[in-house]
Length: 519
Ligand SMILES: [Zn+2]
Image 1 (tube, rainbow, N blue to C red):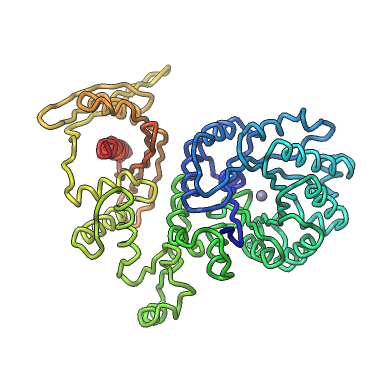
Image 2 (tube, rainbow, N blue to C red):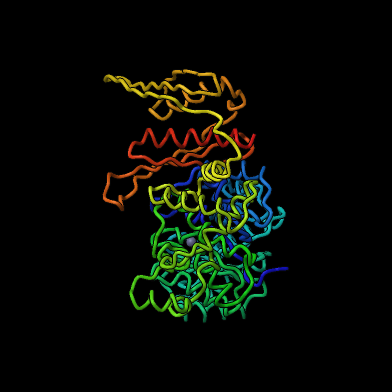
């Protein structure tokens, strides 16, 4: 059934324009898969005309099957004075091979005159030509009307004519954008209502959070004829960010009571939010509405007391509905069912209320306290579950390792030796590398492939390091997150130590062990 509100995720494009955010192609693919599984309706993968990384992303994404989301490529209308067929940026959009293409064009007379420096008519031509050309190439076309609200305030008649130009050329959606993020909800509501009266095609909303109204403005437009919301996970984006989907989605489902993402996905919202932060290598914001770790934590004495008597006394909603948890009560209902679900996902049998589950939960709590993080390290989590359920012995043991580095003015060389034990055999290998971790990876791999030749297929796709604050007053811990692939599937593993090499070795060892676990 068609949802009442469509969710359009632009974390990979608008979100990646946020300060401090830089996704690799592998990161983008992982996030796209997660978003698809969560159930957003569109995933905007990038702007193929703006950088080679996005072209590469679309080439890889073509090979994936998305079951819920439609992939979209983003770009702009043709350049002025260039026939649309001759415009390289438009050609790349078509070549991205996505079913949906989103283009933005100018609404505001100010931008037409001062930024584009063309006539108002030529701008209308640029919009119409580009939409029509994309439709002629079989694309579903979403037209993002940049500065829709500011443009309307400046010259309503012209603004409407730009939207109508897109509609007339066949656009499936016209999306009104508060590009500068400075509008108030009343303005957004009123102008969206006008647009709905002037257009027959469907309407969407794209907002930014410059005055803290990103989500409010999106919701305001929904009441006035829009049924499509664009935003990013955790609100990443230019300046102060975009409409935060981790707030907009539960507001739409639980407050406005409109259907959007599948109902069962809501309980995975916090997980999705943390996953994307992990991949972006950003600290999770504890005060983030709905999904932050503090969103349902109660500290004040009277609050705690009341919440223990009646949870709803100081909570607007049951935190488990969005996969979050109350932090004063020690009952771990959410934690338990998460682990049970994860165990099933990974192919282990684990029932609620068993001693094994309690052991796993206690162990995870201890480890999380030390700085481990399992949201994006499903490989390490699988090993932890598997070990507790005693389904298997560790397939190998790292007995000793050594890493050294020597350098002169010209170059520096790292060398690592690793000795592993597999059953009764011992393998001792040396490798050089670009850095200590690279050398260690080489030596570990060389040693293990002696007994497990198929591990040759495994390669590292990503390596992330985070220095954790020390909540306990001891020395700062380093968390290493590694992403590996065997060409078919990908998994993450984690290591934590005061020593970065030690943390890296843990994550590397887990990665190899996980590969063997699934064999
Ligand atoms: Zn934007």
